[in-house]
Length: 397
Ligand SMILES: [Zn+2]
Image 1 (tube, protein in one colour):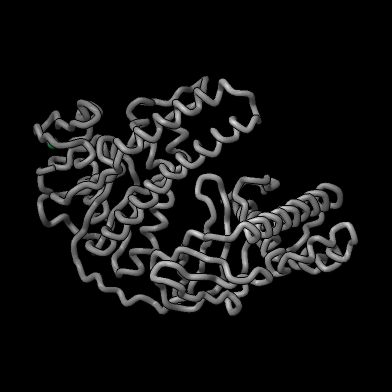
Image 2 (tube, rainbow, N blue to C red):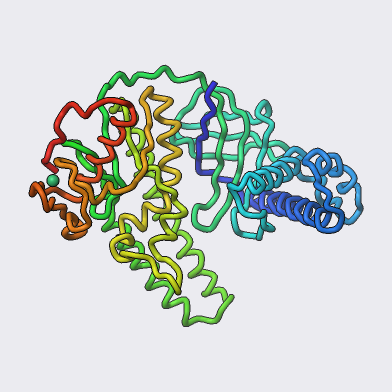
């Protein structure tokens, strides 16, 4: 079985919005209390509190007359808040996350409904449906795409940038892999190209101009915001508009990553990618005050800057999408891929004449630098498979 998430725009009524925001507040309250409870227990008695300890304490907490307002919230949603806290702690102990922080109002406001059998989705018009949420009733949503399968859970979230959204987790039958391609392609996170591909394959580029325009607009708004009184209505208005623009940029990036990863895993048998440590990447680019990073300008090209934020999720997408479509993903070490000539193998820093241009000092091979790197990555991938690169990498860009 396959779990897939679908995200839709939610259109709650005024009354429903009020209730949902209140419920989100309750979930936040439970999360933060749970966090304090765990931290205090550990600091005072070195005790670790488990999820079940906290879940079992919930009914008692709710019976407190001062906290009776918690009773109006579906209890499973409150339990989910504790579940999320537990996951945050697990990630922390595993070393993949920071120590859990208290949630703040207005930042990642969300509430989960794990009762899949209750969440009924009913079609109303071609693109309008409604979802039945416990204790709340039917809420309208814009169903821009259809899905089949069993609904497992739903999460409603709200932010100024994205508005109201619902993510629905659906259990679907396994996909039958359709990809029979034997072709191997190397991809590189480029400087002049967003994602460069080896050989003659076309490269993928983010709509950089569009993003630049939005970022300019953000800068203008932030300058204007600096002149008005802090926390005034006008100031808040600027906050909302800026948040909206920021989410637009992130949606453009997400759309790009989804389309590219789909296209790659559908049409190529083996995809080779650099095994970049995303955290190290941003570190090495800017460096610290005492030890400034090398080649800051080269590494902080716009393409890289924008994609750096999405590179980790791109890898995740590639990991599961290659499984869906029946292709394979190979990760190789990124060492020397941008300095090595893909024709003769000569590795030297001087090969990289400019950001965009690669000119081999030994054989004179001239190519776009990102393409050259992608060719090297492809070769590394084939070597790790124990195969020799059969076709000579094409020169055309
Ligand atoms: Zn060469």
